[in-house]
Length: 497
Image 1: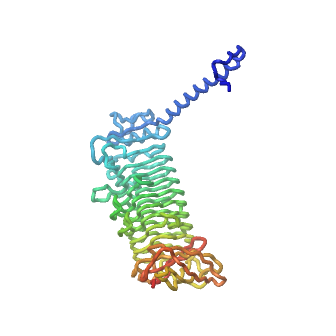
Image 2: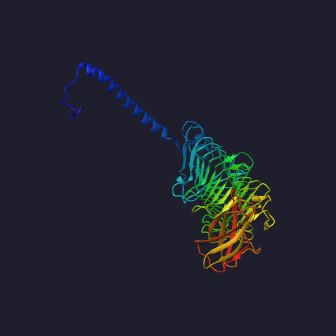
Image 3: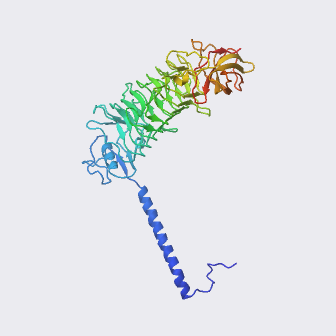
């Protein structure tokens, strides 16, 4: 087979040369354009880095010239933010402050500039730093100010100690920002709390607080820990993941926020609260005050980070109120159930005449000082024939257990509710002698579930055989959830024989 690029081929004619020349000419131009484009792309990616070298707070001498420098030539955090705001595109602010140990940036005059252009401010960049080691303090400036205000998209704030701000330690007005690896509201090793009005306040959408390993924020000692859509502004699809809220940096002791650990208003929707420790707070661990479509999964609420010790929230674990609808606490997949335990009050409170469709499933709920699940505020809500009443979670009737046998792991019972409706009955066990004093249970260990359908009179009997063992003397309970997601209170305790 001939090689069409062989030098042994007959030389082409002059006419052929003329025909081939434009091809090679355009190939050469294309290569040149490709080279120039690559160079331009490299230039575009090389965003400026502004290195903070001074803890004082002087202004930038010439914002927009690409150089962070005060009149004396130093780069302060204030000057770096001013220069970043004046330079379109995503910039990087790092730190190289002289000396070791803790570095305190104390704001004494005006608050820092609002962040209006995308930037990463990386406190973890400080050399020889036991992260975090850079304090951003509002103790001197006073007033109702924020430590940092992010009014842009695509920014990251990480590696700070943020204390003593009259409003929020960090306020997020923009979208798609990340807040990671900060201690907010206290100074590790300092015996006094240095609270902010709010640890983090979110007024934008698609923001991430925390994240995976190494990205945890510890948000403790503030008026509230995290507030979403508080006071104004719809805020959608924010994620709070992997943080310690109300504890010390190890998650082993209480350092509670004075109010709620996490608060979501009626303007918050589609939030995800995932794999946090929300414990030791003086209000509710989590309150959904009208929030909708929230997923609360994989959290420890009232327990320490190991899940083995008591750091209860003072008012209770979770409050779902003010027409907070279509929220989910727990889930059926691995890692989705919550540990809701040791709280001073109920595990989960659902209250409000129009607060409905809140699904509570597969969670481990135990050792709270009141009911595991309470629909309303009057303690146990008795079943009513045919379950026609409305109210929180439609005051869904709970199952009645008639037997529980430890040798065969069989649980029998019945449910009376709306006629010809389907319900998911979930079964739980708890250690012996742990039933609530009311006689109605909580549920420490999820045993399984069974789908049942009531007849024309609203009745159904069931028999459930679990694959998870329980023994004689253990406390067996159950809940019922309708197809819309209305979960009942726990049933009357049945002691396994």
